[in-house]
Length: 121
Ligand code: HEC
Image 1 (spheres, rainbow, N blue to C red):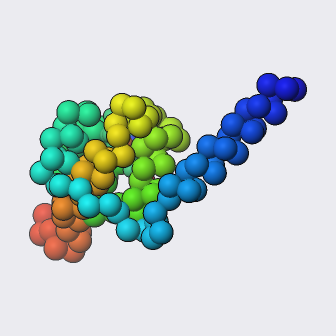
Image 2 (image 1 turned 180 degrees about the vertical axis):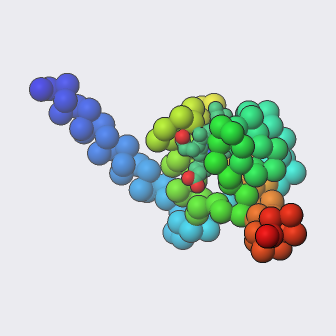
């Protein structure tokens, strides 16, 4: 019981700290260098599941052209819901994550199906 209370108190404190650190405009991503981001996307192994261009693959979702706001992106990478391994701050600092985000933002969205001749009847 005491332990449970301490965990709850710890979680509340964590939430307070996280809220205090949240940027004024959560939708705006911090500036990050896309070239460095590309290197980090590779060195951290994101490409293995999501593809070098973030185009998606057998193991990971498409990221290019369908990025969520930076706050959600960070939250997801820190605590993924299914198959993806978690990347904690110690392993992948938020500043580096911002660079990865900048790289993914620089990748083009998928072309519309109607623009691909091979996919027409
Ligand atoms: C071992 C494979 C794997 C690796 C490595 C991996 N991911 Fe994922 N990722 C996934 C899978 C699979 C999903 C789909 C949901 C799930 O199963 O977690 C996903 C989902 C995501 C999503 C949510 C996409 C959405 O729109 O719902 C983001 C953002 C993401 N990954 C970013 C990253 C980043 C950044 C890295 C590297 C730091 C990374 N992933 C490394 C497998 C991986």
